[in-house]
Structures are given as C-alpha cells and as structure tokens.
Amino acid sequence: MGLLTGKRVLLTGVLTDDSLAFGVARLAQQEGAEVALTGFGRGLSLTQRTARKLPSPPDVLELDVTDEEQVRAVADQLSRSWGTLDGILHAIGFAPAACLGNGVLEAGWEDVAVALQVSAYSLKALAGAMLPLLQAAGGGSVVGLDFDASVAWPAYDWMGVSKAALESLSRYLARDLGPSRVRVNLVAAGPVKTVAARSIPGFEHFERVWAERAPLGWDVRDPEAVARACVCLLSDWFPLTTGEIIHVDGGFHAVGA
Ligand code: NAP
Image (tube, rainbow, N blue to C red):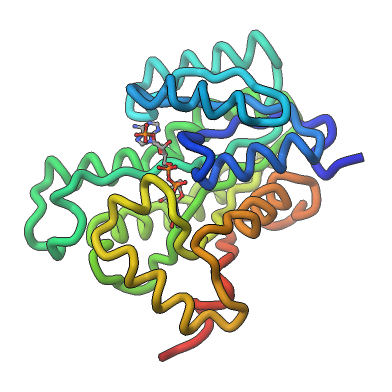
C-alpha cells in the first residue's frame, strides 16, 4: 500500500517535466493517488503533453487561478467526477517582468497586483472553492510551494513580497480551515531549474550560494526531495501539522554566511 492509496489529489503547476509539480504528480501516482492536473492559458497544451509522460496520464482541467469562473468550473468538474477531494497542490507563481530584478521601487501597483493575486491570493481562491469537496472527504491537505520569505533576496523583489503574503495567508487559512480538518502547509524549496526559475534574473547566483552553503548540499536539477515532502504532507502522516513551513533546501535557511 502506498502513502497516498485511495487519495484523490488536484495538482496545479505542471507545465514541463522540470516543473516541481511534475515530480509531485509522478510520486503521488507511484504512492497510489488518483491525480488530476490543471493547465493555464497557452501552457494548457504543454501541460497536456507533459501529463502523457506520467505513469498513468491524468485528466488536465483548464485553470487560470485569477478567473473565478474557471476556479468554480474545476470544482464542479471534480464534484461530478470524484465527489470528494483529499488534497491540493498549489504550485503557482508569476510576477510581471517589472517586478523582478529592478529593486522594489520600480514596479507600479498594476504589476504588483498581478504578482500578489497569482502567487498569493490564489491559495485562498483555490482552497476556498475546493473546501466543500475537502469537507466531503472528511478533511484533507492543502500544500503550497514557497521560497523562504523571511529575508530579502537579490532580484526576487515583488515575488519575494508575494511569497511573504503566501506564508502569512497559509497560517490564516490553517486557522480558518482547521475546524473542517483541512491542513494547510507550505514547502519552502531551494532553487530548482524550472521555467519559472529561469525568469528570475541572476538565478545562477542562487545556484552558486546554495552549492556553497547548504549543509546537506543542493542540486538545482533534482526536484525529488521537494516532491517527497509534498507527498508526505498530502498523506496522513502529518495529521496534526498545519500552518507550518517545511524547508526543503539542504538546510540553507539554518546557516549564516
Ligand atoms: P513552473 O514549472 O514554471 O510552474 C509555475 C506554474 O504556475 C506554471 O505551470 C504556470 O503556468 C503556472 N501559472 C502561472 N500563472 C498562472 C495562473 N494565472 N493560473 C494558473 N497557473 C498559473 O515553475 P516551478 O518552479 O515548478 O514553480 C512552481 C511553484 O514553486 C511556484 O509557486 C514557485 O514560486 C515555487 N518555487 C519554485 C522554486 C524554484 O526554484 N523553481 C523554488 C521555490 C518555490 P504557465 O507557465 O503556463 O504560465
């Protein structure tokens, strides 16, 4: 029996097989989960192609997380096909170019608002819309992907502020969804080479300092440790853990210079 046998999980953020969510999808299936993916806009067909590389190609539902109708439509589709839902992976992040690599003074509110909505508010949009399905399962697990927002990083700028909002929101959601037996946790991952990571100016800098400082070492091409943590949090093995941020970063966050 696998860690996720009998569980139905909705996984966002699978774009290519480099996506952190792809590693989660593959491992979740290996551990017995029934999986549905979401794809966004022009990336939808790429997600559909990537889905075919999974051990058991899952359904791909269209989802722009900023579009309330699409969020509702995903909930309706899952309600018809599954009736209940045990877990959600939020692996969605985006900031317009003006929000990255220019310092925080340059970007205007219109761009910042997009970064905050797509990267932080969307956790509430998704968890809120799926809540009746999670409740119908007797509770469940919401897992989000984070980049440690307790410090200011080079170039990460408004994406860093969006991650700080995501971290805070995960705690408030943990408070509000706890009575429904729904846990809300984040995995703060070290840098991994994905499409989103490539859009961060100076990503190589992160690569270099992580290799130098992480006590356990770090490989920007290996998403397996992140996938394992997400699958554990989606399973029944963290039954009383919520509002938590688990660092999967080779221990980088724990050491100074
Ligand atoms: P990725 O493969 O590019 O995944 C990001 C996903 O977010 C893409 O599938 C993207 O779709 C989707 N997305 C963007 N806007 C959306 C919207 N409005 N509605 C629905 N989906 C939308 O990159 P990733 O690195 O795996 O990122 C997944 C998560 O991990 C993000 O939250 C990211 O911040 C976080 N994270 C990444 C790292 C890292 O180093 N890679 C480290 C820590 C945390 P499109 O590409 O089609 O727009």
